[in-house]
Length: 392
Image (tube, rainbow, N blue to C red):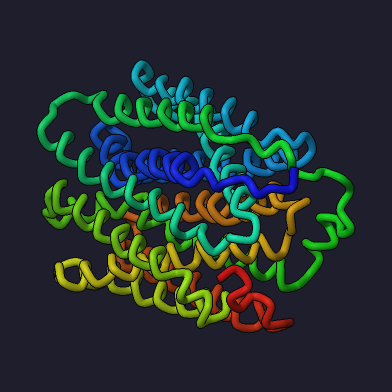
């Protein structure tokens, strides 16, 4: 009974592969799909904001149910199935109202999936949490495969519905993988010694959550408008896809070496360095779009601006919230950062993209990252050195 269960490495990795293949098909090309469907920048920003808005409520509700019932994977399987079913509605609807309705419906379930699976992965890893990066890197590989493959398919196809059809198929694969992932029913759901509200009252935890919200707010102009931005400057769809893929390839390299970094540096140091590089990245994208080599450098910085901040965040959530509140902790992190931050970022970037210009929008992103840097520097990781290499 006490024999350790083997880690289901390939099944966990497959989930990340297909989940982020969806992201690789959606993020670089969905804004172009919306533009070709007749929507203007404000409407595109609003649709992405609606998607981000569902990420505020859905992960928290799903996390509460998962921690309350202990049925993490059963919930994941249900929401993954409903995600694919609802997203297929894009094959049939037309107009802003129809797109908004489907966006809210599928987004509610899609945004419930990943935070709970992060908790499942960390449960399976137990005291080997340093292996998280090696599993998560398969998500980055899935992103690259999708962004390059879908870009090529879109260049060679005239079908208006090819993109939603591809994404629906990938969502179905996510559901199928969830069906063969081992359960986590042995999680102990007895009352925790520390309540969730006690954790949230800690200044370090609040600062951590606010900083991550600002970081995702800053990422939104990149996620929503980067492809449109490059198309405006006559970059081809294939080259745009290569730049997206380069960013995620850099992310993979960091994931591979993250274990070594965790042994040498504290999570606080990794987070601070990643945020500082985020400021540099957004300023380069905003002001140097005519220089391909600088855009290449900016995409390489994605290793820090996303992978560095995300891995540090996942490990800090694991430390802050413990096993009993892990589902709620991962959900809260997703809700406030990718949810609230993503919603506000999508809205402001759509609102000001044409009126103020890309340079100002990306400058605002750099400012948000600068504020996040100050918050992390003052509050996060100063209380103790327990975050250094504890998971390495």
